[in-house]
Amino acid sequence: MAKTALITGILGQDGPYLAKLLLEKGYKVYGLIRRYSSPHYENLQFLGIMDKINFVDGDLTDDASLLNVIKTVRPEEVYNLAAQSFVAASWEQAKITTEINALGVLSLLNAIKYFSPTSKFYQASTSEMFGLGNDNGYQDENTMFHPRSPYGISKVYAYWMTVNFRESYGIYTSNGILFNHESPLRGIQFVTRKITDGVAKIKLGMAKNISLGNLAAKRDWGFAGDYVEAMYLMLQQKDPDDYVVGTGEFHSVQDFVALAFKQIGVSDWKQYVIIDPRYNRPAEVPHLRARTTKVNTKLGWKPKVTFEELVSMMVTADIKRQEMVLKNS
Image 1: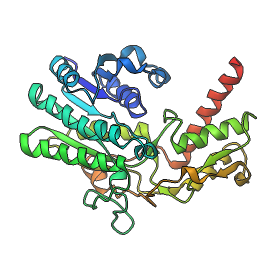
Image 2: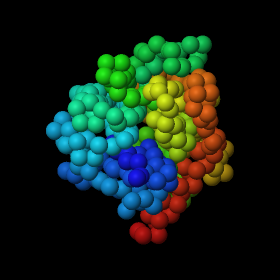
Image 3: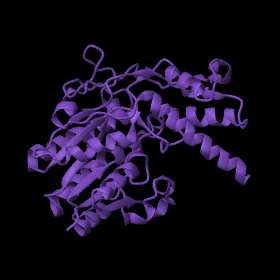
Image 4: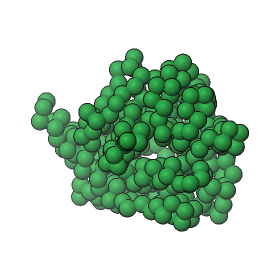
């Protein structure tokens, strides 16, 4: 019998990569979607797995739908990747961010407790929980949380609720504290895709510049396709645990911009970039950098794609996308 897995956030960035990995391992994959929201399937189509997913209706803000899904599917593994994950929007949408990212996790865990207590649960935690917290410039599993956004705060709640269900009810729950991970599937509103899409448009004569905010912020950037392997490995261990996942390197937004423009042969990128203070956050997180000793040693996981390869991959994909737009216009 094939293992069954339920993925929330199946239509986002990480969901399709995780679904592809699980399908390759012989899993039957269920994907939770909100039917009323006119879902977009482009990312699943991009990876060629659209027709291999079993879609089920549900919403993290609707307790009854989650109870019904867990009771019906009774998955062996649950990967909660759904979230209001755009950090900048969380200040203006703090309530819905909390309802989805925090209370939604509680509802999902309760559904598992009542109807499928043997399910293994993965919670997509985030380096944004650390905020200003660091240990000599790094963050690991022992670093203090000091979130600087409603998004980060909501994720801290979900993190501790995940730990609490493990300690209170003996449910197999693990947190993956993932640092920034990107790909050609990243949403266009995120700074990395905004940069690579903008560079593609400039190369093809479709735009003259890119408007960005704080170029000094430093992040530990990796490839989403690598990171879903760490998610999978967490739920294959004998005992549940929490892991920081990253590359151990960090680069500034300016580094990302310079490298993206380098892909199209432009060295003087400043003439194409407009700094717009409207994109600055009310409270910035200056730098995030993972100390990955635990995930490297206990799970044997290490990233395969380098920062340079990631940027090249994303620019190349966006050039192809925009070329199709021009061809069809």
